Amino acid sequence: MGAPHLSVLLKEVVAAFEGMCITTFVDGTLGAGGHATALLQAHPEITQYIGIDQDPTALAIASARLELWKDQCRFVHANFSDIATVLAERQVASCDGILLDLGVSSMQLDTAERGFSINNPGPLDMRMNPNRTLTAAEIVNTWSERELAYLFRNYGEEKRWRQAASAIAKARQHQPLTTTQELVNLLYPILKDPRSSKGIHPLTLVFQALRIAVNEELDVLESTLKHAIDLLSPGGRLAVISFHSLEDRIVKQCFAYFASDKESTRGIAGVFKDKQPLLKMITRKPAMPSTEECAINPRARSARLRVVEKVGIEPQT
Ligand SMILES: C[S@@+](CC[C@H](N)C(=O)[O-])C[C@H]1O[C@@H](n2cnc3c(N)ncnc32)[C@H](O)[C@@H]1O
Image (cartoon, rainbow, N blue to C red; front, side, top):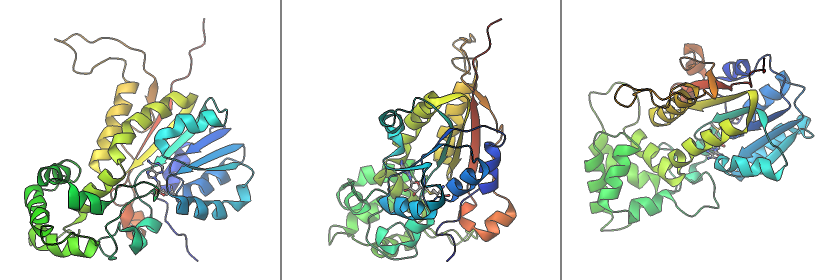
């Protein structure tokens, strides 16, 4: 059987931690354990690999796949926003490396019943953590037209956000929308762009917006990055793979702020308040997948990897 999920930018992730001596590593998005396998192979010195995922199915797949490293691995069902609590509960004060490979896995996309896929009809669900209550169906059927419009504009950057929200508001007066197919059938004629030749499905951005809202993906990202930076030991590294511009912007701005020696790069009336940088940029520009990787795994095409290192304490002279 092939891998249930092809890990994106695998070589680049391993390179991001190359040459480091890692005792404790936190993988905030364990998924199918593909990055975990490569990192554990590259760093036999790891004594504790803490793998977090909010999807219990992913944890079950990863734990079977990582059997060889069962003594080092801890599998934790949690949201990565709880990284500080997860570490505190295990009496771990700091760690040497952290990886966040954001978004959904192929297992989630390819399981029609999870409702993530535009092409595999399923219920309007989209929860990564099935224990949570908010589903895409609830959003589509109960949020006001105005709320839906802002959702499609702000989380989807969909140009026809108003038209999409208005069509949903009209359609649900007759009966609620319950499946991905119903949503696709309703919005396809409104969102399809006859001039577009990119081969991207017209509902991609609407599905993205719904998924982000259901899983509160952007709400937890910024706070998680701050906790992650806090928890790194001096010289430790944080690597983040994002899959769309909204995520990447949050990562880029957060890293730029903590790597800067100024409080604000804009300055107040031209005055820059100094501060101690907490981070060093390892990737000035994000690493992106090669043409070969995109050919093998088209889902990798929008991936961006950014890596930072926590600044070590300067020795006193
Ligand atoms: C792209 S996959 C990770 C794949 C993994 N790196 C591999 O190589 O197999 C993302 C995983 O992160 C999980 N995930 C996404 N957001 C999360 C969050 N806020 N907290 C915990 N897990 C999350 C998803 O459930 C999914 O299993």
